[in-house]
Image (cartoon, rainbow, N blue to C red; front, side, top):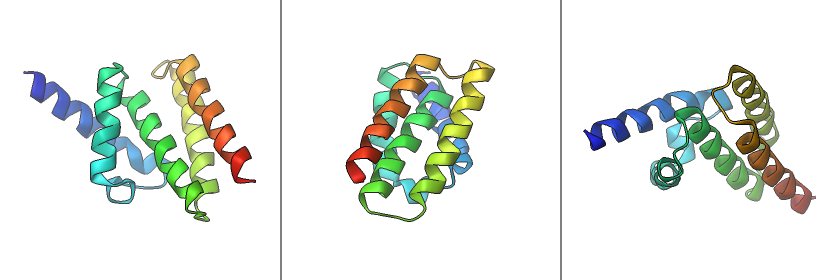
Length: 109
């Protein structure tokens, strides 16, 4: 039963990734799996886990100076705002993720 729940969780998260402008292949299967281990342990909803993965992918894009990084962060912030208003993502968690991304952006400048 545990593995079925975890498999469903991972599947739901992967289905949400294209909302941010990338897919599992771009995010990296192994990196995503590692991030989902953390999200599962933290008891994130699948929406929160997708947001977590999205911010991590954004961090990698920013570090690699990928031009798409700015489009991705816009998608992340828009989706995050929508999900918070729908109640599927905790506001404090979304705020923490966003603040961390602001730090990464500031360091990049």
